[in-house]
Image (cartoon, rainbow, N blue to C red):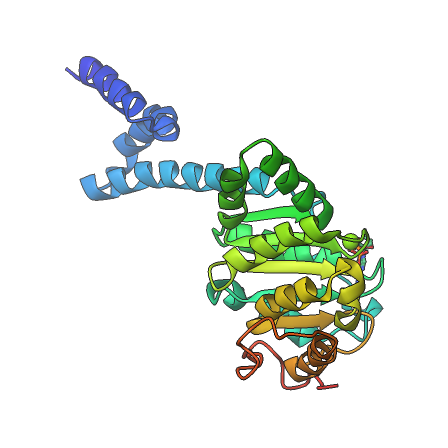
Length: 281
Ligand code: ADP
Ligand code: MG
């Protein structure tokens, strides 16, 4: 009796694309002859094989999509080598509450202090937790958006930047951003505002963002949206509370003729992620 049914069962599993279960079927049946599990247990165990395979496939897919330039983990990060870094704040970030809250993370520091490593390590944590993450550099983001605009694909590209739950924008500030490029970056940041997290790394302190953008208005507008719900990690020195950054943004803003936002009164949210030990500056 069972040969024909077994064949049909294999076909059903193949038709439903349950490849891992199909592959396990023969040995699972053999084992069941000995162990005599309940019907429920047997089906449960067989489908669990398929669930694990699917989870792994999706995880691999999210990792490939994320396009990390290297595989770095938080476990590899040597906190002793970076005593100025607020370790508890990093550990808090690693809980990914900021991703859930669609908040941002700004990593500031000179080259080589581990900004990219931390961004990737948190990105990998997010991938493992099931979030869609995408890594890009500021230069690449702007180049691709500019090309898309020329080729009439601007909307599609903007939708793409809006897709991932975490967008890592690495290395802002190494290249100056002329007006149009800055406008593209502003659009990306602004559309993601309260919609998805941005992890941004930069070698420039907030006070000198006016120089990156050659246009202080755009710098202020970008910072306004980025910092509204954000944690800021200064890697070479202190990890600041938002107040310090608010003062710097205010300085930058004072250089402007006209106010560009209506959020002056709200200030920045000091998120629960800011550890009690992080010092205001
Ligand atoms: P940044 O982006 O700030 O310029 P990177 O993250 O690229 O710096 O770090 C430079 C190199 O040093 C990378 O290979 C990185 O993995 C390593 N690195 C930096 N800081 C640490 C650290 N605290 N522990 C372990 N490796 C580190
Ligand atoms: Mg880097």
